[in-house]
Length: 351
Ligand code: ADP
Ligand code: MG
Image (cartoon, protein in one colour):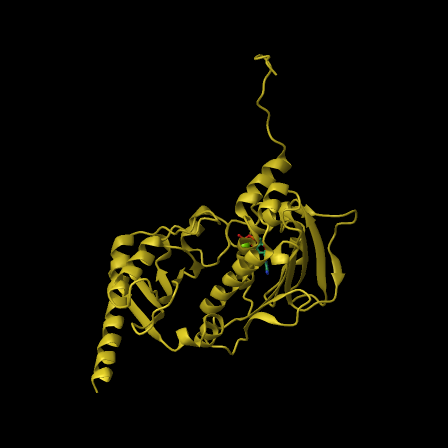
């Protein structure tokens, strides 16, 4: 069109806007699943079971035994910005749940077919509802009563069915499954009082099997191997000036792994923090051979008002106040533990 007088700017249709936004929140099966796991934990579940088919692209299903969703809430639960967790902007600074933006289910419903089966303590039966583009789907969309335990089952089918380019880009279900299992593994290590399981649909083998009786060390052993678990040291420290507490497990200077595992939770959120990661890696470089790496799991508690939780769901790199001071404090605390371990090692070698 060469006619410069014709207007070219048009407002996008609502459904297109929503789908684009949804595709930003849910980039691949694993981060969709992370949102679902966090919802289950927010609902006070103690048992979380996950089934996937084709790396989560055909099916991603999560079953929990949490408090469930009220029947009356089922109509709007997948709409954008509907949440039971946040009412005012001020609430953000003291939020203790994972969720607060009410975007996960809505986003998933714009890029897949969602079925929710849920039952609360107050009802004798469960209710099942299907969703499409944020709304109840079908000719007779009201939630149907059915049998079911207290808790919630959410099935996400044919992820990105309506985003052909995205769907095509995710060509490798094995790779997607690997990412899913990585997320489940890390949440299982951090939430070691909860039971987690992960399996491929149709299979009887559990790819992740963490019964509630499995300790954190049991879980690390089963995911990362006994060779790592044997060499773990506990770290725990706190600093009142910086208003920070942390704990975790780290490999001792005897251990030199082929690749780095660095698992970091800040205020119970799985995050990345490159400055901390590099600081810890540099520290280990003084203890272990070149080109070898430690295993690190750290859980930090910072004052909620010092951490920016208002980050986008896909932004994993976290921002917090006094970052430099906090990083160097953790580095020193870890160094103390490594130094002690190293000293006792040279003593036992001399004997
Ligand atoms: P958010 O977690 O930010 O509130 P979501 O879109 O993830 O937003 O979830 C919307 C709402 O659906 C939640 O606030 C919660 O009330 C309900 N919900 C989602 N998943 C579950 C679940 N597994 N058990 C109970 N309630 C749930
Ligand atoms: Mg959520």
